[in-house]
Length: 188
Image 1 (cartoon, helix red, strand yellow):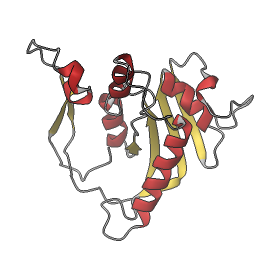
Image 2 (cartoon, rainbow, N blue to C red):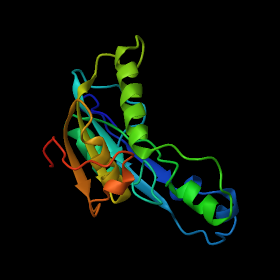
Image 3 (cartoon, rainbow, N blue to C red):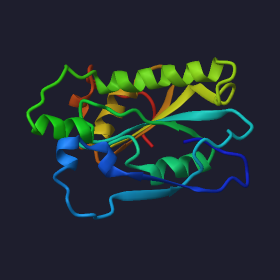
Image 4 (tube, rainbow, N blue to C red):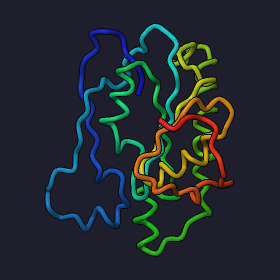
């Protein structure tokens, strides 16, 4: 999600059923809507300017789009928002494990945020990228919900993190690869 030029309009819709394993999807015989729509324009141009980066971390059984109401709103206020799927706890993999599919050892969710920041930094400096010259990855805010709130607590001590919002995390510092005893940036 990112600021688009003034006057850009549109809606984007996603269907949660596309985010679950086929085995589970095939059990859902009712045609009950599982779509969510947010004010956004997919593939719009990026507004002129350089914008701070917000990293969003979803909770257990979540997915990166789950809080589009929030991420789209942050973009409307001048932030570039990037959200990885934490496959160690995303909806698809949690349901897949319930079905008995263990899979590989998942990466550390804090590392997911670091890699997302690295990806956005590369996009900022890649000629021809939609984000070239638009993303300030030196000043980052991390936002997370539930298990994602715990993840941002683990990420908060990284260099360049200006602040964080840990929503409903219950102070899950165990979600971090290296739990901290103090967090330097201000909690928002």
